[in-house]
Length: 310
Image 1 (tube, rainbow, N blue to C red):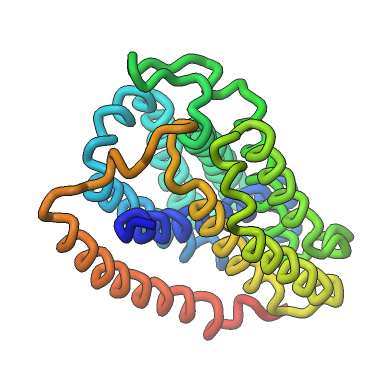
Image 2: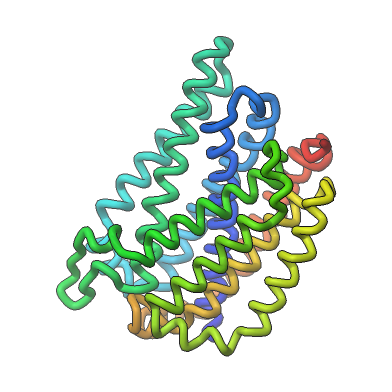
């Protein structure tokens, strides 16, 4: 497996995990803001900055790793990416305004606009990603896209799976009512559904599933063990759920390699110039600095301040 690909997918996995965590917070804000408003801001305030940082890191690293893909991505996905970017800007604006509002009613409205913008942006980005995995609704030869990019079974499965993951994270962190008794069932269901989607609608990728059966089994065992711990109200289960999601997204990237757009070879798009070596070095060094800095931010924002205490 190519080193450039691995590093790019590691950055992507962190970004997507953070976005799904934030999606869980957004879902909580939409359906139960009044009940959890005291804790929501203490969780959201550090995370949205971290998510944005890794989004920029991923975009820059993607450009360096896949320079031959930029024209294709810029043509096929320009519209959905622009809409997602606009929603992310809207999310940032209303989150900041909501955080400093003295009026309780206005603060609630602003935070719900933030939450809705976050969820819709997540759905749009998932549509782009699922299309890149299966090639549904796009023609890379003519460089054209159709509505089938959004309205196809695999995309609907991917969206449902992601929302289930976000719901599972929200349950684990906020202990949402009686749903906490479900343990990790939503998370297990999400990834089972996603892998069924791969087997049914991504034949090139489904051929790789057998090679990673050990990793898949390890994830199933992890979910089962931590599901028991969550059902018993172990206070750290919410934190561990984040690492389980990170592991699962990384596993998807391993299964996906070396395919893109259904059956195209992603190695054909990788940077093969003399800059490949320096890109690896810069990503490792820069990524380590960013990860360490943001880990410290999360530590002082959540752990040291006791935001995870029940």
